[in-house]
Length: 258
Image (cartoon, rainbow, N blue to C red; front, side):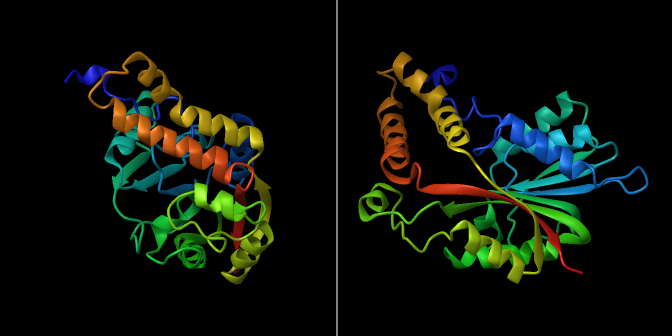
């Protein structure tokens, strides 16, 4: 098989989640303001993927160093290559390991974008509480945590749930207020509360599969075409008939209580 025509993977995504360039830049400005020349920032990125947000933060924050952990070696290799290309290779490490009971940290800034499930073996929704307590342990006393966590924008109806992933449940996520309450109970104060917009979701979902959709159009008879088509059609159906406009993503900037 010619590897050059194999299905591409996530090549159109900048961030692995519904995060716009504008929102990312605003968040980075706020976060980098807490670093000083005498106290360079340490960053820990949980479930980092290729760590684009972390790399941009390091570019903006002189002296800052970072560690990204993830289980996907392909994504980690992409992160390492991007770091080297941007002159950040000596300031960041990408480590293949589980985040459960990780020995990394504590760090001045802990990033956890859509990766709370990586911090606990508990099932939803209990994993969110467990993840928040793990994040509290991983952040320095005057540091910050940025949590990107799924929420219900409204309660899903049965037809929407049946179009989502296997065993999707109304109790799987909290609403925004409930998530903030959990963060406070875990020992944080919410310094900033924001949610991904519909435009950010549509940009993310389209870019998530755009490269594969174009590949399917170009190689309809490829040996991997059928299974690839089934996969992308299933995901699109989950989005358009299931969680579009129902599931949201909250971005919480959290400050640990002393």
